[in-house]
Image: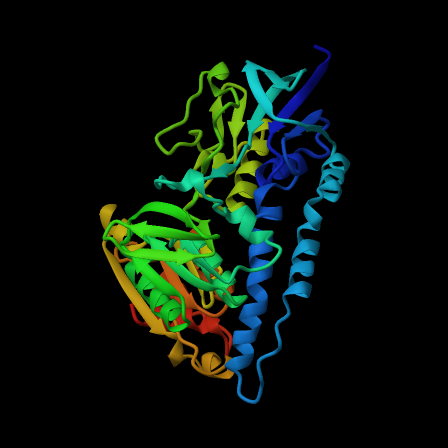
Length: 446
């Protein structure tokens, strides 16, 4: 076959990039196989463009809530141009060059495992001593009658749109649905969110979803919770969505933001004795091993669909390949919804702790108690809750809603990871005046 590599990576997203960087300098021959753009979904169609487009509306809100300021004027054209800059105009030349500089051969095309240590890319076949599967995910298309007859938008469409629509129905009330709804609303679109579950963010504590629903509704976003979308039809250039209770919603655009699933189809898992697990992804052990000489990392494992977890697993897999094994620990992985205000969580929810038989205590503080909230602006609200193991005297979880929650949740991430005693946390004052002080108040409330 001619081409032989020590390591071949299927997928050039965050996990694949992390493997390449970790193997750099180890003297191994490495190939990175990518069917679309090196950098993956996050860099071009998800994390980067979504947070870029969310920032302008967020700043306008901040200006409105600070006394003495007027709201800045918003212009879509320069915002879109900056979005295009941030996603490199959907050109991965620079990222591919970085992978080459790190010692990887970048091979363009869809890779498929055709046997132990053998990968086909189109008409080309390469040999690999070791394989890392990092093929990521694909968008889930909801099962709604008539969907194949209309032009539905996925998240790729909405985050690379030329202009915001006049109005839109967003299907999904999870993290992606909420961010998408707020982004569109912030750029002038009238937004309706249809969520099959009875609350937003159903995987988080109920109070989080309730608080967010209240804030979104006050902001002018319509919420249809516990709503079952049954049928759609085109209507004079618009879309009609019929719910199971007979109600009909209408908009210019229908946006599917109901989630993603691991991309395991047609990548040849069966050739190495693998098949998707119950989660729909590739089952891996604590070292990200999936089979003999096969590792998997990133969203394709369905462990936690976050870019930072993909990086982490890529490094775990690479270290195992390099003969310096370590085990993955997912106890303290932060979860963030970049809504306004932000939602951040880490560790176990109270419900999960109870299911595991952990005796818990909870401590909560309203952000209104913090001096920082008042200095930040008027009308800000939110809270932080910490969850403690009563017997061991350590934190096992935390969740918060508030400005920049993604940043100040970090103290609890470290506390959970390092199993820092609550007594030590209580004896550690956070700087004044910051949102970080919420941890001190929440600990005192335990």
